Amino acid sequence: MKTIGIMGGGQLGRMMTQAAKKIGFNVTVLDPGENSPAGQVADKQILGSWNDPESIKKIVTQCDVTTYDLEHINTDVLIELADAGHCIHPDPRVLKTIQDKLTQKQRLKEVGVAVPDFVQQDEGDTEAFGKFGFPLVQKTRTGGYDGKGVLVMKSADDVKNALPGPCMLEKMVDLDMELGVMVSRSTNGEIVTYPVTEMTFDDRSNILDLCIVPARISAELAVKAQKLAHDTMEAFGGVGIFGVELFLDKSGELSVNEVAPRPHNSGHYTIEACVTSQYEQHIRAVAGLPLGQATQARPSVMYNLLGEPDESGAPVVEGMEEILALPEVSLHMYGKKETRPFRKMGHITVTAETIEEAVDVTRKVQNLIKIKAES
Ligand SMILES: Nc1ncnc2c1ncn2[C@@H]1O[C@H](COP(=O)(O)OP(=O)(O)O)[C@@H](O)[C@H]1O
Ligand SMILES: [Mg+2]
Image 1 (cartoon, protein in one colour):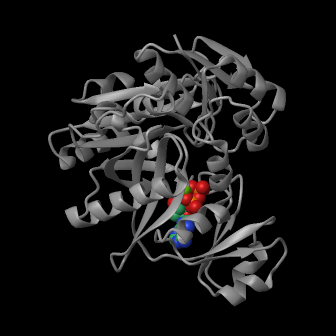
Image 2: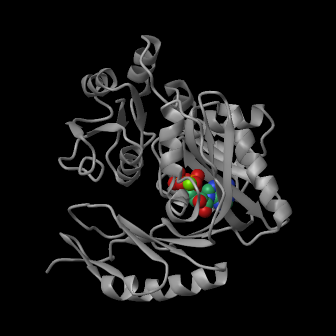
């Protein structure tokens, strides 16, 4: 029986592990936190960091294939191990290009995938802002997530708040909607694309709030969005599932915002709504198996369960009985030992006959459920 190694033991690793176990693999997780969300369901957890060369060597040499649930990891060690013949998917060189938002966008531009205009901004180059023109979005090249490392500059007045470190500057897009498309690629180069999701964000935390699938856009736009995701996957050529975040602007134009070389928050819905979940698809791909169908069986809405703003400590789910009494509500909790303000603690997927019904039930769920701390 093959053993799959997963670097990173968070919720994405946990759901990957559940999918891998479902089809009969052994799973070893690497995470510095004891009894991590993924470690709780895996066969084995190695305690250690995804930045520590020794820990990385340990997991890669102990497993038949190694993958990851986060992109901020040590790629230099992974590249060495891949060169020595170890199986690591997606390819750590692809990860290295994607880790840096500037090289990621340069690659997409090179192959003709639509992206907002951008330039490189070297550390401390304060003249770059005015030269590029406002309004703009300044982004740190590496290490950002959930809006950390992203700053909107409307005018020269905002320059005083500039982010430190090597950055890129991007034209501010006049957003109509933010969309997401999951796309997978097998070891044979076969590409399977999922339906288009509509993403809304929580204004207080910048974390994904609701994810509505299929997105409420025209069939023509949906096809264009899927084509962009397909072309993005082809441009990078990794093996596994990627999440492609897209912008739809007010004039109806689509562009790629960013790419995550792993399962994505906007693809949680696939567990209940699609023939093959994003997690099983990822496992199939990295294990060299044929990909499954991405066909959506039911319209769905996903809602992230974030820790309440003023609560820290052992988590308690308030309203669990009430929400589980509603039709087609599926609850996922990640097994995190502690809730903190806006921490991702779990999610809900609602499926229904129509999108309107799924949105209606989700509104009820939102009013009923709260993640608090034990008092
Ligand atoms: N060029 C842009 N124009 C308008 N809004 C943007 C632009 N770039 C980013 N944003 C907004 O900021 C959010 C976070 O940016 P993103 O690059 O996706 O960073 P993160 O890695 O934190 O997800 C996006 O989801 C979007 O709402
Ligand atoms: Mg993003």
